[in-house]
Length: 96
Image (cartoon, rainbow, N blue to C red; front, side, top):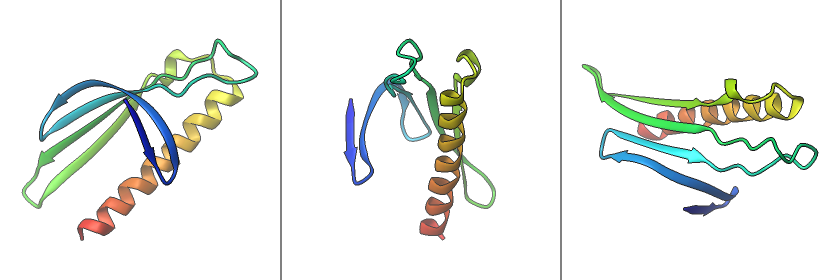
């Protein structure tokens, strides 16, 4: 599945959908130009859990430990972590 937005084109594989509480996608990020064998295919899971005060949104991106810890991988991990923090903060602002 390819998703296109204002921020670019993203290629994803739908791994599992259990609406409305869980979704898992595999990020098909492509390869590093200097290390073509280094494909970054992480698994991103979204879960929604009702709490006494509302809904908890949890995002887990796994698979990083299986990659060779190159600068390319470290940069991608850092950028993804910052991106999820930003996206979740935006979602919280929107819902408040």
